[in-house]
Length: 138
Image (cartoon, rainbow, N blue to C red; front, side, top):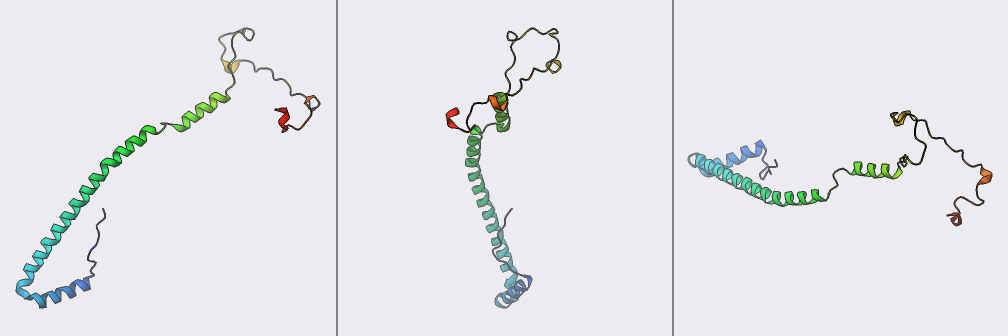
């Protein structure tokens, strides 16, 4: 908690103020003046802390309302939603049962299925003429 220092006195300065107060007020009135000054300082400190508490509580309510409103607009898990969108976009299509011959063993797991045959890439001579970055090929 931050407590501002209004009077930043070193011990030497406090001693000097005490000596001057002793000469000005005298030994009879000095204890009563010190008590009065202590009560005044305590009252100011209480009022200051009460003011700080009131300001903090007044500022806390709008802050909570703004935070709750902002949290409604946040996506719960952005990484997961982006990962799902990318994986669903780039996932290979699942083979349908009507497109290929039925497998000999339907209980086999997909990991044990034979790998699909890979077609070799066409030879460079079979490619269409032109630069691959040519807009007319698009």
